[in-house]
Length: 361
Image 1 (cartoon, one colour):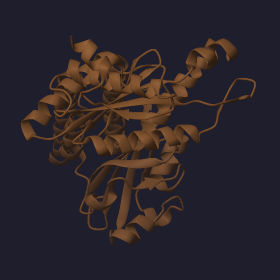
Image 2: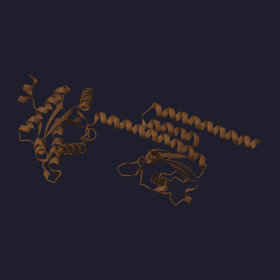
Image 3: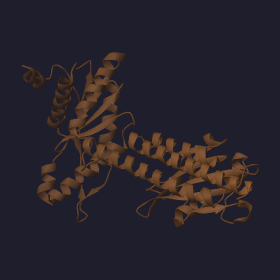
Image 4: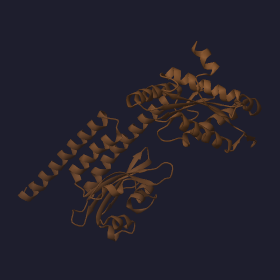
């Protein structure tokens, strides 16, 4: 064996050792954390160590739209890529996601599948690309794409082989994190409405009361009860009644602020926590939500219109109550005032309310 052959063999052995070391590090990352970004960062650190791309990105498929979104990007223009979307089939990444096959392209100028509009927008010149799919049981969930520019080395088959192996680990990390999130969501979510459940609501309101005390801010609680749900159940059946609960819960979830928190308290009762919100604003929000209900079309299974309304009660910390139990009780009492006024109404709590006095005695 001559010196040239020895040098080649030594290079191959060094690469094999690096690959083995990287796989060990990736295995450690997979078992040490369920934070998907932390695990992916550890994985891609090994990609950078082994392949040394000029730029790389991880794109995930949006299950709702089917588009590819840049989830993580490391490049000279990374800040401009975050959140950018590609349609399925668009460019090299879109082709790989659509067909589920890896691609190695030495010069993108000679491949018609390359879409150069991102290069043009970001003043970046791509030369070589290796792109592999992220798969879970043959289901494509995204792609990893490595890029080298004109002045960098061209990727080769060995690069694609190691990236494909690493992509399998990345897919496992993503699926583990998603499953963990789903389990946690089931623990705190009401499966009928998609809102928080009553157990988690109590934790949330305790936290928000503590925060309101610390920062000397107001906190309002809306307690609402669907009107005449029993009549809907008796007339159209309990399945329709359950669907009304589901549709109304999702209506609430879509029409509150991102800082607000809605929960199904029990049966046909719902609560909405409004941090840093006084009574006047909480009453206004409740009135808008009631008006939205009244203008929304609900239907039975046989397409008969259903007029769905609710009675709203509002109480505010610390004006009306100082603890979670007192705040829930005060908003519940205000809700019964709305019921007694004829339903489909919004009422704020007042301390002279006789029901409140009776409850406190």
